[in-house]
Amino acid sequence: MSSDPAEEKLERLREGLRGLGSVLVCYSGGLDSAFVLAVAHAELGERAVGMTAVSPSLPESEKQDAERIARKIGAQHRFVDSNEIARPGYVANEPDRCFHCKSELYEIAEQKRSLWGLAHVANGTNLDDLGDYRPGLEAAKNAAVKSPLVEAGMTKAEVRQAARLIGMDVWDKPAS
Image 1 (cartoon, rainbow, N blue to C red):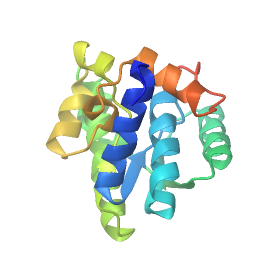
Image 2: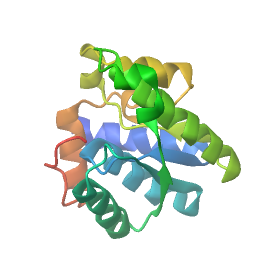
Image 3: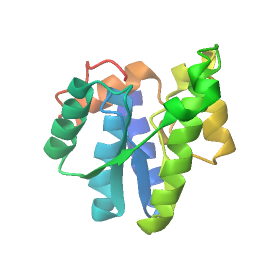
């Protein structure tokens, strides 16, 4: 194995994704989820599907970016309708708003995972995300969502470096 930590962790990510067998990646078009989708597609082919939830809170430009990036990766990508604004906890706009948004996302993802015959749901959470107040992480935990970047021990800087290593042109794109 290489002495480059990003390369070592990239290999760990590849192994982890292969171990899942098939995966639905909750894909926003931001770097982290795009990177997970790219590596999942490289390792699993058609057994990796990116899913982007479309709601009134998703700007059209982000939807177009997600579609463009997925096309460039060559991965299967599907848009699904989401309606987090129907959730009182989301509309209340309290500090836990993301919990309600992600709960909606992961409920939809679980339905689609089953419908599309995939084994797991995954997200783009990295190690650096764990230190922040992120109510959405609780929603992911409640839904048994996999976090392959966390499992591979990857920080945001390592994701950026590894994304460059695999030739992604969005290695410097902010998260969505």
